[in-house]
Image 1 (cartoon, rainbow, N blue to C red):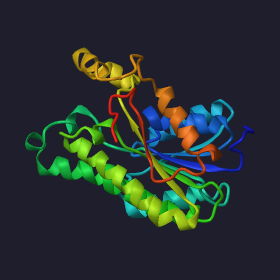
Image 2 (cartoon, rainbow, N blue to C red; image 1 turned 180 degrees about the vertical axis):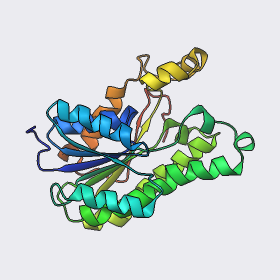
Image 3 (spheres, rainbow, N blue to C red; image 1 turned 30 degrees about the horizontal axis):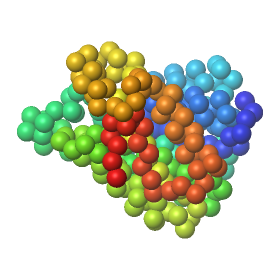
Length: 251
């Protein structure tokens, strides 16, 4: 599929469903070769198969983002298609109701797993991808944070606050290699999962905090990703873009 991203490779973690799957489809539609990585390899390959059926180029690979050796192998395989990696989207993360509980209720094991995936996973994948990204024109890393990072009060939000901090740190460290690093903090986005799992009272409470009354949709996050990974954002790095309808507005 020809397009403005032809000749580029994008790696998306957590690519089997949700935002990751949508990111992959959008980039493939512009001509990128997309590698979807997910702890559920079958789900990743199923999402990749949908892209291929639509005329795009995609590969689905299984792997845990906390597994250093596996992520190194994944990035090396991804780089083979076009001689390197142009876009890395660190999207994989734990965010279910199970990991949204108070720390005292979750206990140490679950909190450790939450931070291992949401924070250390970003570090692991970034370190694995950088050797294949350095020096490539327009190379960019996008981390997925959350509006919860800016509001406090949960271990999940704290893990995503760490992702925002890592975004700045990696932007400083990788700028000399020509790699931009930014993050997106989604607010209440009514994906199929959120529609099915989040109580209506919670949706109403969060939406009442927005400054824009419209529903947040998956396309809003996809559009933000497409802008941040494009040349139009070529002078933007170390930033966290809040796509929250104003819910998490702040300085």
